[in-house]
Length: 114
Image (tube, rainbow, N blue to C red; front, side, top):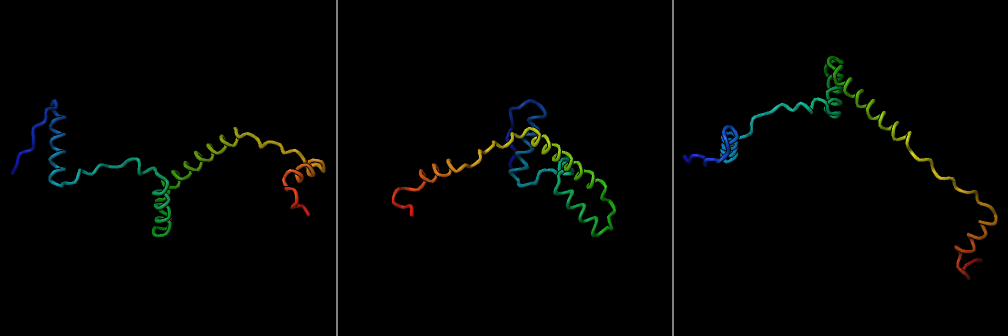
């Protein structure tokens, strides 16, 4: 069995780097780390809400409901702010008979008009 190569990093960083390199070279999986951010993502909470509603009679849905309602409030606030600062559509001038004739005269080539 071969010994892992010595690293030239100071202290614990060297031990950690060598240990990780050794684990990767031997095909070992990295230790499981809890993913705290996944608990607050929308799709996961929608799944938990549906699962608990169907299989457990609605028990344990409070956290999922609170997180999904927080998403609703945040996105509604963002939408309201964007709508508040939206520029109004420009006014289109009314079409009068004079502008209609001028537009038709320019847009229909000579000889095609019947």
